[in-house]
Length: 176
Image 1 (cartoon, rainbow, N blue to C red):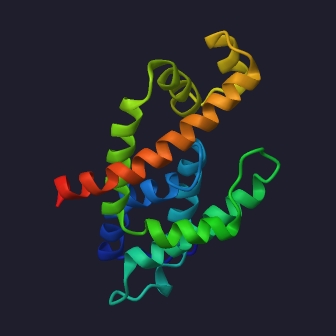
Image 2 (image 1 turned 180 degrees about the horizontal axis):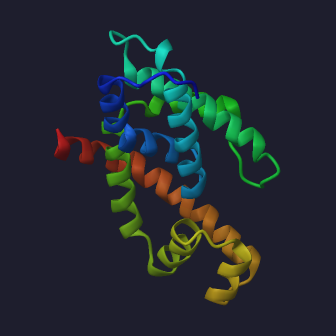
């Protein structure tokens, strides 16, 4: 980076957007470590491009746009992983997830739906999504065949998606 300095206003905006920007990135990447790496990359780019930012412009929109491109670049690098999102999906999610209030509503609805899962499904979901265990490890921990764990994860995702669709309106009413 050159010897240019970052204005106080710019640094305040950058600090103020960290939490929502991280949530936005995390909503499109399956692992916290990846989201943290991308957030660092985005922060570096924002600092390097400080002279391109207009103080009268929309800082949040500018930062989210840079984040979207960094997410796509990260996904491209990780293509060899089994689970990855296409650039088109990232674009679609980016358009829907720029409103952090909506993201919080989805998270609240998801938490409610997670609690409604049967105990055995919650255990498998916890191992997969919180502890980030692979299917083989989950299979060993719960004593079920790989195919059964895989099928259960599919049902968990389906159940959660349907439940969130249903619960979202009641969560919006509570928050509004």
